[in-house]
Image 1 (tube, one colour):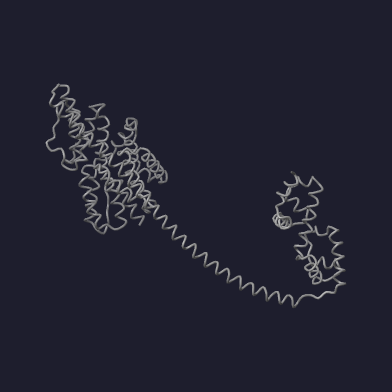
Image 2 (cartoon, one colour):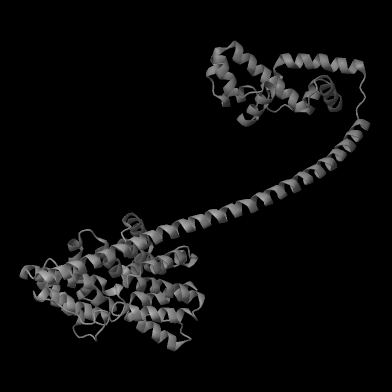
Length: 471
């Protein structure tokens, strides 16, 4: 699916857009709509809506992104915001960098137009991140769109215009972006340089068939070319919003003219028209911001609700699992207790019977062994000690178990810990030694086994014990 999306997006960025190859008719309609999206966005929007009715899932995402662009061009901000929230969490946007770039480019412009500048800046940073993740060849294919975006959102557009101007001059006339960029440059110079502005507007409709964009360019050129009232008998051939900025400039132009002529009635008329259209623009932007805020909090509320449902389901699962594990634990505990009892019974049956005299003899030898510090030998074993004490392992083990209440290993560890405790209490130098040295000094093979035995014998760690002595 990613390969299909990538191929389709190449045709979005380059002049043209191919739809489903199995449906040539839809592909041709879609390609024409994309080519005309700047010249006649209203007609392109109708085409996208028509194709969305029967689009496959992978085509639907691309069509919605193109529809988002058309809604922004037509300044249908609320519809564009609704599309933004519909698209922003789509998984395919994260898997296809081309689609993600196109989506983020459009939403950056949306936030810029409705005045959400902090959100615009964050989104533009995402665009830059996507650009940086593209390969060199792929980055070059979207570079012009990126520069156009930089120009449109820049606070100092004149600094960006020279670079954009040189880029667009190299574009073929059939590239649908060329007219649009010329129109943007014309608007930039509209109040600064009438000659430059008029030049760019002429490039828009020069050698191109009539469209909504060429109509706007012709009228704007007229506004820059003569200081006379400009009238447009039928100013809206398409969307009213699409022409609102042009209406505003016509009214300003006529107001300034009649003001210079001191013609009172016309001054009042165009001042009223100007106030009305400015109020209309402000209300439109205000509604867009309110709608965005409402959608944001609706989504947040829904996410919270879903999160609470998930937490509730998770809590039920955790409780059920805990009950199951508890029952499982009880069952295993009873099972292993019965096994342990049987083993104990078998051990008792095999228990060595040793005479009191023999046991007393072994205890005397053990006392001598404890005084000798032979327990510090890392290699000491039950069999070796039994041989040293001139007894057998069974007798020795039985004596240690019954008289010392410890296993052989625990008995040896106890002797070693008592040895090092005595050193720590009587020789302050030992308080400065590393734990690893103390472990080796007392016969332990590792620091971890020393620490475990120390804690078992004293109830605290070697470090804590040493600190208490130091205090």
